[in-house]
Image 1 (tube, rainbow, N blue to C red):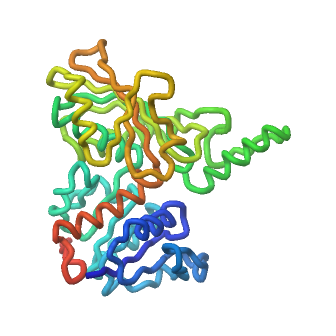
Image 2 (image 1 turned 30 degrees about the horizontal axis):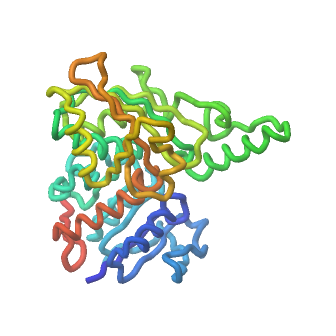
Length: 347
């Protein structure tokens, strides 16, 4: 059986990746439609090697009879149109931050908490923040072994997390450096080329940024409500691929051999931990890959039962589009989609 799938925000970086991954993974699609704002209507966008879709207007689209909608049009747009799609009987998998912490809406990383899909009550499922997604994939096998109490993480996040405009700004500033053009700063708070910026999203009253807050609250919702998280989120001059330096403190003593074995067997994880030059994975090596790569695994001697690691992942794939498609696949595997979208909408 195939499904009728709508992709909202199809002309953006994540939307294009959603269409690419649906085709790559041979998701059982009978029909697919690309949706975007009125200014993009009529544009052509690829689906797979041969098919070309003409973009339709999200604002006037009728979701009745459609099974799955993959949303990535921005939080304010999702807030308006995702509930309309769900009310029409279409299961919405939303990539924006708008619904993530709402009760009755599961926040899902399939390798970690796929069973939460059965608790959906409003026809909407939330995709987590890109930096959270890769971290919980890497930490789930370690939490199962040692029970994590506290996480301290520093992220090194690619400019693609800010969309196409962020990538364009890095490219323009880098090129301008070599021809002595002054940098134009628009998407970020300071020059991003040849620089790092310890500021992603807005500042909150306690001094943390909202990106750092997201990592804490989303990790607790996905992995364990008792875990404490301290995050420092940094934008770096990398186009694609988020990196994270993670230190964990656990309830049980760390066995490094068991930790390595668990990570090797964990779904969605590739362990490359060689204690030699180049024996680790960097963001440029993970572009286009589905896995979360873990390296630099070592005991943290500064705390009891401590472990440190490095992880990288393609933020446009596992951090967004791939995870959304995997959620759709998990819905199918668990029998939660039958004869169309059967997740109930209950307000």
